[in-house]
Length: 165
Image 1 (tube, helix red, strand yellow):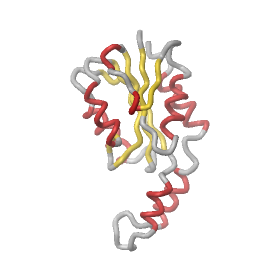
Image 2: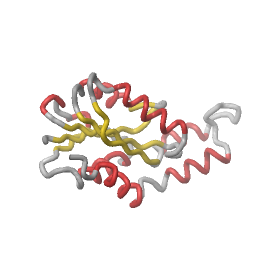
Image 3: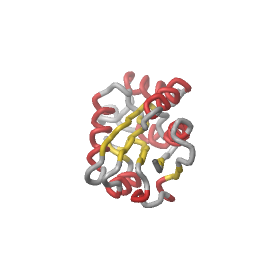
Image 4: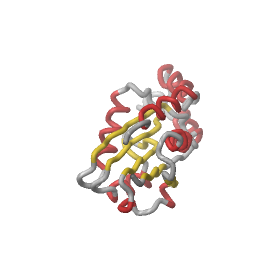
């Protein structure tokens, strides 16, 4: 089975997860950042990884995912929100909707990832009535996200993609 991993990573978090997943997929699995990714048509299995932007795959990955048609697919991503939050589930569901026709999702994984420091700096300057302004809960989440992906996250990613075929 010819396998491909395509990832998009802004801060390095999603790249770390992609590399962990690569370690448990069959020898010969290819891995590319999305900007250099090949046409997925030649592969039997495609794993796509993205960082969450506004509740879905970031722009570059969102443009690539519709090219994946009729494949077995794995989806993984990192996000600043807590991994068991409704936002995380919505981010997965929205990613699935970006896939081309007749795909079967056979693996999934997501975890927190450190937020781009430029984004937290921008949000830190927002007035307190703004919906994304810092508050105690948000500051706690940002601090927690900065610790991820950690070794346990990377092992969980491997487990989610191990022994797929």
